[in-house]
Length: 153
Image 1 (cartoon, rainbow, N blue to C red):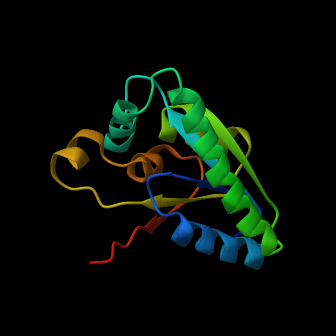
Image 2: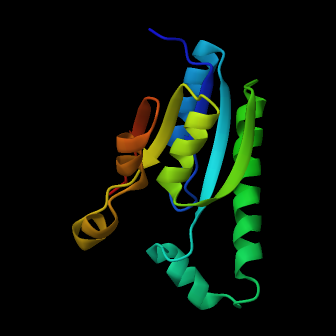
């Protein structure tokens, strides 16, 4: 089996990242790999339901800064959690279409594995948008490990 030295871990703020971070942490510890957390702000023109709802509640002038601040604080929490386990980790934020931006990052920086979470979408939402993980599986230049989001019932 190929040893993984660089793991790319996309973070979706609308999804509990705990299972993804746990698995990425185990892999990083086992292989001595570095973890790179990444969040991609979707390009203008596409906004998921959670973003649309939040935009209706916020002052238009404060929206972009508040979203970047929320992302940075979430990312910092994840970084500290992984660093406390003795893992090499860093984070980044980017703008663009999530799967395209992540695939390009993985290609340019020669990541060995992408560990991404996925939520179950149903009906029209899945038909219209699919999932970032699903689309990333098709275009990524390296293996993609999809960690399903298990919803408690």
